[in-house]
Amino acid sequence: MSKTTTDTRTVVSGVQKMTPSEAFVETLVANGVTDMFGIMGSAFMDAMDIFAPAGIRLIPVVHEQGAAHMADGYARVSGRHGVTIGQNGPGISNCVTAIAAAFWAHSPVVIITPETGTTGIGLGGFQEANQLPMFEEFTKYQGHVTHPKRMAEYTARCFDRAMSDNGPTQLNIPRDYFYGEIECEIPQPMRVDRGAGGEATLAAATELLATAKFPVILAGGGVVMGGAVDACKALAERLGAPVVTGYLRNDAFPASHELWAGPLGYQGSKAAMKLIAQADVVIALGSRMGPFGTLPQHGMDYWPKTAKIIQVEADHTNLGLVKKISVGICGDAKATALELTKRLTGKTLACDATKAERAKTIASEKAAWEKELDEWTHEKDAFSLDMIEENKKEVTFNGGEYLHPRQVLRELEKAMPPRAMVSTDIGNINSVANSYLRFEEPRSFFAPMSFGNCGYALPTMIGAKLAAMDRPAIAYAGDGAWAMSMTEILTAVRHDIPVTAIVFHNRQWGAEKKNQVDFYNRRFVAAELENESWSEMAKAMGAEGIVVDKLEDVGPALKKAIDMQMNEGKTCVIEIMCTRELGDPFRRDALAKPVRFLDKYKDYV
Image (tube, rainbow, N blue to C red; front, top):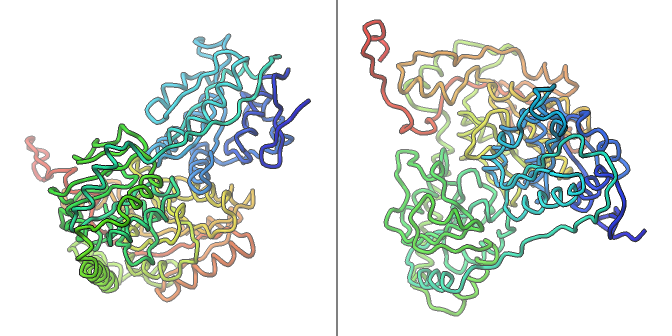
């Protein structure tokens, strides 16, 4: 039997007699799958039985949503597929939220969804569900195996499309189709080779850049996924252009570079916002310029409304979708940046004469923002000041004090180890962290993006850690979001995937509570959370736990936890006791002051 080599494993070649389960598993091997996340089930047990001899490990999790988040984290770090699988019906429906998050992160996650056998579909049998509609909105392609002979074909296509379309795909398999005898050939992976774009749009972009006086580069997720950081640097240096990063794409440009200006969007960098506000030409490199990442922030409506926009996108449907653009290039971020730099080399540009002056402006804005962050030790709105005074009268269950979140985030930033990977959950403190998270390399920062689901950070970081065991892995979560997925600590402990989790214990659903402060006269409904110690719960699950209620202990606690992670293989939960102060809300245009017409509700305004 002839064979071809894929990594250190072999895949059968040519037409061979095999079972559909074997065809399925061999196609996984052909696509380099070594790890999958999920909970074992009878629906795919025949295939699962041969995972181990094929060199595939199924990581059993606590909840299937965690499995899909782990696949997302794995994909975002490795640049390879993340794969999740579960039992038909409830095991699959549990994954919907996490696949939605992966969709908005453009992660190549393949969700494998075994379903009710063909002879029982429509009869309302045990764990029967129509699984394709569940994921229709959040997948780039859905493959439904229509016959056992087509098992390898559909499996391969789902893996190919996840890469070519930059997003999740679904492979739906009737559970009886794993059995039988077929003859088939295992397809080899196909990858799309993207170019720099069309001649007309590249020429138009070059002309715009040649005449630009204050060009700014907006580096988005496409820079990370396309391996375009160095190409982006070269283009920025040729133009002397500041580089701002898209919302929650803080790892799209190295923070130590003199042209780095920080992230846009909610709780982003004032320096970035003030600089892009001056732009006459913006190059949106691998960015869809999503609405949440360009909304007014810090009291500034900073988007440059008269600037010419050059948008570079691998997905042509995103061109001009959110913002009016002058030039739309359907191309690979790396290839396009390299081509534009090549075309600009040797040309005299309008911005050349002001390079030194603009460099001073960039440095000045960045210095002013850093100084403001240093002095911004706590929130200054009336509610936060009241909470600070109230918290001064309390002591933590450890006998210490409640800390200002901004000071905590600054100390964590200072103690952050080299090459760290950080995931942030949804919540008020996690959002404020956007101002303090800086990275030197791509594939380092992970967030639930536009879907904004809680319970994201820990499982995503477990998947990321498995893909890069040599890198420190850190998850940020508020105590509300933390409770949604904290049981995945068991997964980390059981399977020796050590991570460090930082839980901001401020006893509230902070992000939504801020709306009750601003719009509902501090009438708090379901916003308060009184919790036991998260660190003690972590210890009960086999992890280490540290409580921090003194500011000087924040940095040392992180360093200690990272040392345990990297040198002892231990997972640790750092529980930081924080005041109930709250940063600015996500967006003020999403609500309005209440109006009441019925007498019994007239006081609720």
